[in-house]
Length: 227
View 1 (cartoon, rainbow, N blue to C red):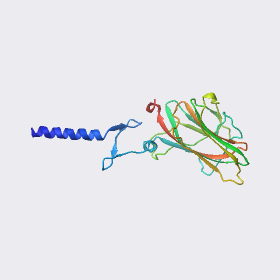
View 2: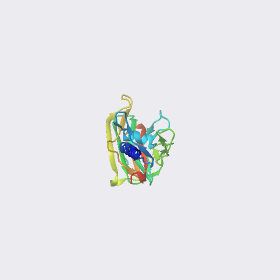
View 3: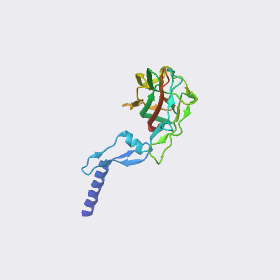
View 4: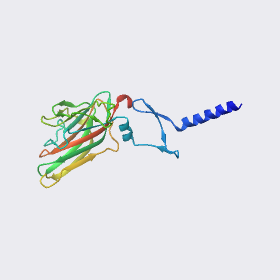
């Protein structure tokens, strides 16, 4: 009887452990347990950090940090300054866009960030050399194609009326001779979920074609993790 009761108590103990340590499944179908402190409080981390730990956060920027590119002298939907195409089978969730720009004369300067439900790239532009995983052991490779305006003009399909404008910014009369470069950071509270095929783009323009540099971070998942 005593042995039976002991086994029953062990079973209760094991059930209790399982009850306070629920299993979770990551985006890559790995399993982990909830994490608790010594006083029994659950320890949590923000979603972005969790995605970075799983190797799902990527970054693109100009290959040489102290170089700049030239934007457009007017808004033209077929000529974005930055374009990232998301292929079928991938999901792109932007979390941070950093654009630093400077004009050469006193004209209004604009930044427009948007997305579309097709891959819009046509031709031209300069390819970003690598979409870097923010986990340095590179557990996953990005499927994103990233281009920016360079020696040849970047051409894309006009998004038309289905374009989603996510962010717009205007700065009046920035002048490189009297003003420092402007830095614009966009970190969406509710980011768009781009299920490939799709495109993410930014226009950086002004009458005198401002120079700009940029850095973009996003979470990239397989389509099966979302759909």
